[in-house]
Amino acid sequence: MNILEIFDPPLCCSSGVCGPEVDPKLAQFSGDLDWLKSQGVEVRRFNLAQEPQRFVERAAVKALLDRSGSDELPAIVVGDQIVSCGRYPTRAELAALVGLTSDQEKPRPSSGPACCGPKASGCC
Image (cartoon, rainbow, N blue to C red):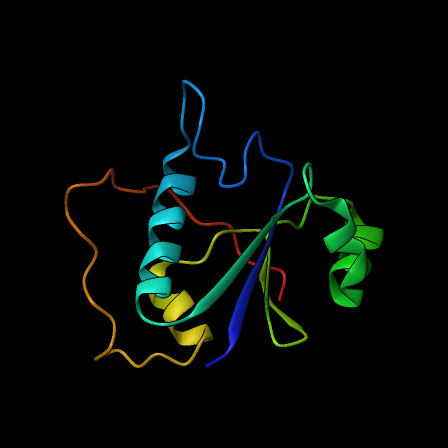
């Protein structure tokens, strides 16, 4: 199985799920990453504010930063390739990116906040 790496824009903490006003998109994405881990996927997440060196070590991510600063973050990397950027993918998209089939995907728990609104298109 592939390793999924997330290169987040500067956040207040490693997941962005902190402080008095938590962004529901970040909370949902964090839950989706936990779900991926429970499926056996190795997930690595880096925050530009806390681990800038990781961003420069990856040629594709460094090129993205050189081109547009942090405007196209988050960048999602599988292998050596950026597979999504500029938005947080849905659980179904994440599953597809790491090769999980639809029958392996389990439904989201209904207890969390829903993530609504139009999604920005990714750059990749």
